[in-house]
Amino acid sequence: DAMVIQNPRYQVTQFGKPVTLSCSQTLNHNVMYWYQQKSSQAPKLLFHYYDKDFNNEADTPDNFQSRRPNTSFCFLDIRSPGLGDAAMYLCATSRDGGGRSYNEQFFGPGTRLTVL
Amino acid sequence: LAKTTQPISMDSYEGQEVNITCSHNNIATNDYITWYQQFPSQGPRFIIQGYKTKVTNEVASLFIPADRKSSTLSLPRVSLSDTAVYYCLVGAPTGGGNKLTFGTGTQLKVEL
Image (cartoon, rainbow over all chains, first blue to last red; front, side):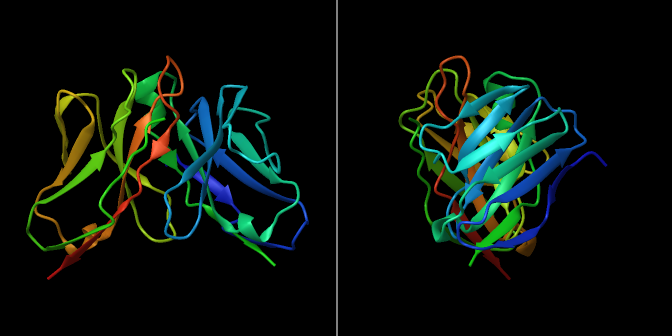
């Protein structure tokens, strides 16, 4: 089945130690997103790729970076995790572009990040 | 920015129809409205999408008034398995639309 896969499902890191979360998709969608979701809150968009074009949200901290080496994979790098970065990180994909397609997103199961 | 607000929670019983409203006063012309369902420790799952008037699929209906400043998700005959958080998503990053923004979310609890 076509899907969005996130690894690992659970990640523990130490304060200030860089961490990378990965996302892969078999849907062949050209748009990929990273969201941060804290407990009891709605997902918050960090950035998205439209093909290879990176689109950063204005309020996304510089501590968060992303790479998309090819259509199928996307990575979220947190350079110096703080306690406030503990959250669920969700990867999503959508097909093509335009308003309608941006909203019809397929989400992975998420990676829960713990910062000690 | 399309600020979107929803009721924090709703309670219902099995077999009843549930209507959840999302307010998005600053919606832009190019913005679409989409609803998602999320269970604990899972990613959101697409339910339905619309632009204006009414849309219906096999699981829900979406009502959008002419001014598009709100939308209502209608779930017919809910069951216990519909207990989840429901989010509206508004925006369209290209073509002059708003940033993609999820609503505040509504926790729906369905009881016997």
